[in-house]
Every structure is written in structure tokens, then in C-alpha cells.
Amino acid sequence: MPHFLRPAHTFSRVRHVSQARASQYPRLLATLASDVRSDSSFRIPVINFRKFREATSMSEKRDVADEVINGFKEVGFIYLDQHGIPDATVENVFDKSAEFFRLPTEAKSKLAWEDPRSNRGYVQAGRERVTQSADPDEIAKLRASAPDTKESMEIGRDRDKTWKNQWPQEQDAPGFKQTMLQFFQTCHELHVLVMRSIALGLDLDEKFFDSKIDQQYHNLRLLSYPPIKTELLQKDGQARAGAHSDYGTLTLLFQDSVGGLEVQNPHTKEYHPATPMPGTIVINAGDLLARWSNDVIRSTLHRVVAPPAVRISDTHSITAQRQSVAFFCNPNQDAQITCLPNCHGPGLEKKYAPVTTEDYIVGRLAATYT
Image (cartoon, rainbow, N blue to C red):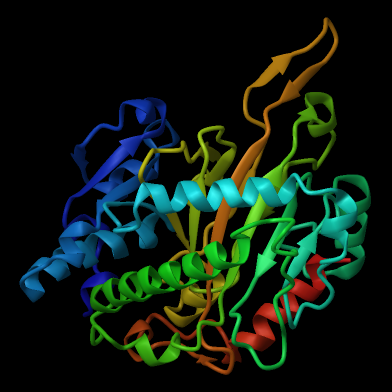
């Protein structure tokens, strides 16, 4: 039996952080599976990825791979520490992102998102409504009654022959294009390494996924959540970003210090803060990786809610502005996502029909946007 299908208590022990004590960034050891089933001790594991990047033996890599798989198997989320991307690089991306969103609405609107097959361009607040629903009518009603209160800028691979990125004029946003192209490549390279750890954790060859993700069919999303009166986020169904799972293999999320991301405990269905931790990347598994692994790996629901508000009068409060950067990692555009050979067998039947990356992602995007 592959080790990732064994009872959870047989996994190596992992470092994790209590959400209630996240600001202290403790380096604790516990058996993850026994903890996350209780909301009072829910944890997202913190994994030191330097041990994988600088490993001198396959056994050292496998130790980290077990931690990664355990986190994705039980929670669907991990914090990646010592990942190799310098803090200064991330800070520069946040600075350039903030400069872009400060541009006049007229300038941003010229770059408007147009087509789910492209998935590139500026998305004004209220246009997207993320949800698990695939029903266009239901999504339209949600968008009308409780739109997502955020704006975003979507960037894809720049060498695509069919779909082109929409860049602001250099004089309007100096250095924006070059910064984002470099960061896109940096994130892809980290994605390759994390997928290699997942391959080892699934008892596959370390480079099993390399040829299936080398087209860089990814999406870099810059996100800005403007300040908003708290009462506007308290309507039924309202959130800064509604509950949803992501579509691809992995999402690399870079957060500012404001917070607001919440992760659903897959065992109890309650939501818990994914508290920002300096120097770490929040990584979650997406739908296509879950399908590939026959749900051995979880694609967990998450949402963005209002952080603590600041009172501005006797009757009104306002939430802080929030920034984040998400890198949505995807398999190759034409990759066939079908159950991995060692993720099914007696007592574990295949759950999903094969699907291509493009068909799945474009279908989800088409239903999400107006």
C-alpha cells in the first residue's frame, strides 16, 4: 500500500502553528491528523522547505515530501517557510501592485478582462463572484446580491501566441511589466520544486510532473481589497471573496499583514484564520491536483472576510485596505488529468472522468465572471 494511503498517524511529525498563537510563530511538533479534526486545535502545518531545496540525499527529500503530503492530505493548506524567494522580491511586487491599483479607473479600465480563455487583464470590483456553484443563474444572483469586494489584475505567460497580456503604459506604471514577468518565472520555478516534493510524497518519480507543467499555463493575480464600511460586508452571503476552491494544481499566496483569509477545516466544516506569517507563503492544493490524486490530496474551501474594523463614527466602522498576490499554478493547457495509477484500487475507485486543464479551468472561469 502506498504510504500516503496509510492511516494518518504513520506520517512523519511536522512543524505547525496554532492560529491562536500565530503571531508568536512557534516551532512546535505534533501529529497533524489528530489535531486538525478538532476546531480548538486546528492547524495549518509550517514546513521548512530549505531542507528539500538543499537536501543532500533522497531520504532528506522524502522526509520533507511526507510533511507536504500530510499537510495537503489532511488540511489542503500549508505554510511554506524558507522557500527561497527573497523578502525584497516580494516587497517589490507588492509595491508595484499598489502603484497599479492607484492608477485612475479610466486607465485601468482600458485593460479590462475580456475572455475566460485568455484570463488576462483588469477586473473591477464586483465583476467576479467566486463560488463553488456552476449554475450561471445562481452565480448571477449571488453577484447581484453579494458581489466580491475586490479588484484584480490577471497576468498569464507572456509568450503565448494566442492570448496577450494587457500591460499599462510604462510611464503610468514604471517597472510594472518587468517586475511581474520576473516574478511569474520565479513562482513557476518554486512550483516545479513543490510538485517534485508532492511526486515523492505520492511514491512517484521525483520529476513525474515536470513534463506536465512545463508550458507555464499559470496565472499571476494581483489583488486589492479597498477599505469598505463594515456593514456592507455583513449582508447575507457577502464577503471580500466568497467561499471557493481553486482550480489548478497549487496556489502560492503572498499576504500582507492585514489578514482576512480563512480556511475551512475539512473535518468539521468550520472556518479558521490563515494568519499572515512573515516570510512564509500560504500554499493550497487546487481541484485538478485533487482530481489527479483521486482526492488523496484535498482541494479545500477558503474565503476572504473582513479583518478587524476601525470605528469611524458612533454608527459606522471601516475595514482596512488589504493586498495579496496569488500565483495560480496549472498543469499544461492540454494535459489530461486522469487518476494517478497508484491513487486507486480495491476499495478506492476512480471518482472523476478525465478532463483537460483548459476545459476545466475555462469552464470554471466562464461561470465566475460577467
